[in-house]
Image (cartoon, rainbow, N blue to C red):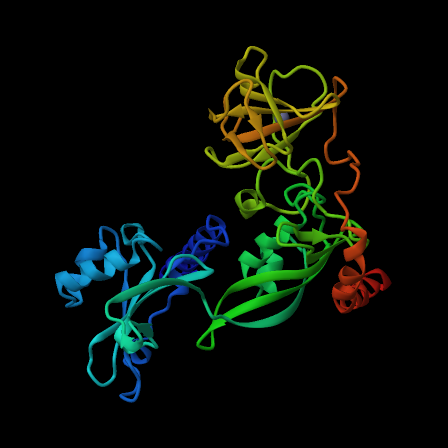
Length: 429
Ligand SMILES: [Zn+2]
């Protein structure tokens, strides 16, 4: 191959992978810089509209210097900063995000400052003289002066998308083949995290379908939103999830009978977004030297420093150096029957006696003790004997209350039909 072409190819591959890696480490609440695409033409909207200036926050920027650079007088910047104080502290603005300054089309005076604090809410600080701001004061209508800050839900346009994929090498490959945002796949893995270990369980030929929201702003795709329903056919077995809000305090995913999909244990002690980058369908084997006896454990290859989470609620019963090859080890007792062990850590993040909740970070992946490479050695112990956690069958989670069941079945009806058509097709093939 021509040398120039190979260099170009390598550059393209690096660009693709760094983009992906970037996505892995941003949870849904984060906003990545790439989502804020600058459209200079758009920001200098037609003369009939207010002028909008978009300011990208770079490393080292502060609210004060950004305002100064944009020509906002110091006193005014301070007034805006003070107005925001109760709602949001503008000291906390983050690199990669954007501040929008809106200038009135007639006077070219600053009328509003907007800043998206996360993927859900936008801070809006308004010059009250340009907004509906009359109030009754001493018997007469009076114009209120000054600035007022509010947090408002970002007004996304939401479209429902139905997508499906086949796992030929990994979930990431399946996502890319089908033009599914990798963040939607991460959410999908989260929805199934009590039933499928996406590092160990997927098989070549697994199929999935999901029905979810895609969010747009000004016609431009921004990010995935809520997953409403999904099915994952793993090694010939169907798993369904349906999103339902039973009450303000109880919303989440349920199976088709209305049982919460949340169980006593997570399937994997490492989150999908951290381990799946290099994942290929099939079994992962890591040589381990010196640990005597049968290897009743699961090894998760992951970079040093990858967070380890406890698979269930419990109490930490051991932390420290193991004399039998486990390196830095943490043991957690979940109840009278079950406990779990997490070995070869680079760093332990909990103390003996500490109470932990499912999903809490308890340490970080390392290669301490008898280990030939960075990985987490994870064991589940039942009544004193090591078992295969992937095979352990656990009772279903808490069901929806009887009085809400009808509402639940009604809300999932059409989603279920959609998914069942898909699985019927999968099993016919
Ligand atoms: Zn191991």
